[in-house]
Length: 445
Image 1 (tube, one colour):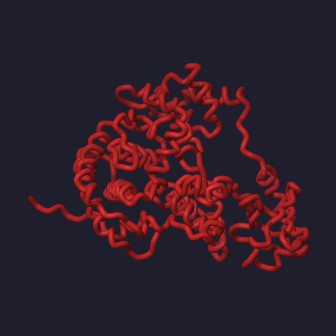
Image 2 (cartoon, one colour):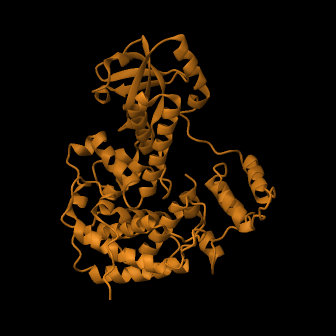
Image 3 (cartoon, rainbow, N blue to C red):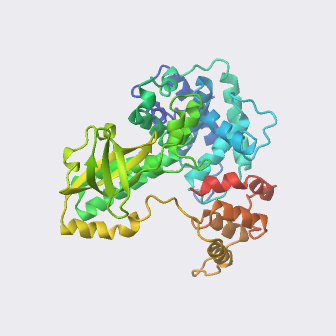
């Protein structure tokens, strides 16, 4: 039998890891990833048409294989990324995983249900949630079964990756250093195998920013613009699992007894806008948000390394602030601008955008959501040559609508207003209905 050609190399494997250089276990897990790749390649070989919903490019097969090998490494090394997810899901829904009965599920070990769930998650994210793949699609089940055979055989002898595990081992000083913690939750929520698609979204936003800068001739400002975008993304992005932030996931991974747990769990989003310096004392520097008049008392500790001219009544600054351990901290790039009529006009243009930055996002009134849902479900407008949408398709469009809240959708489903909401396949209706809250929070974020 001909030896199969290696598809995955060390650079592919390194993409899902936070450290520089290599760990002494990387070769082993790259080998496992190649074995998994062979299974994926063989089983998806019949899905050769790009019109097939289950079609995977070669690069996507590699990424999926590395994802599943990273899950194996995570469990073996007791890093706790997937365990954190199952524990939080169990706390909310009384089961370690959605969709599966988990009757024979074993905590802190590898499980076939984990693998099948991760395959579903990969396909969902790869297709930007546009296709409601059934978690129990036959292809996913077959892949999970074959991959579990590989991992079962390796389970007792697989080595721990101490270098990966040490990434989440914090010194006493790091536990109180927001920037050290930020490095951890940034990687966890944008580059780890469980949240890698968030990082891809951030990269797409960077690419768009670069294109816009080229068109507008503002390339000289790109470093600061990219830095600011990434910083905003990490603090404000809501992940696909249980609508938690990056910092909250790190808190859960570290555990309730960890000294950084409460601070991470309660870390605020980032509030960015135009501010004026007001005054300062030994402990705080006060800034006034120009549009709303809100006073921010920023800790002096957070201003180390920032330009001194920001403390001047002759300039306004564009800056972001987060609440950390009950104090405001300035965060990310700070740009100062001499006060002028032109600047005032620029700030006025942003008035609508910034007016509610300190307010929590509000749901639309129920009667307005009712109208939106009705419009979606009854939309029959077709372009030339288009086929009418099925009830299942319109139901999923409703799920994807940013204007329809989780609570409203749950109520609408319970009242039978969205009968077409289901996954494909046998028991697709019950499978989605029984996991409705998880699915809605997975999509709506």
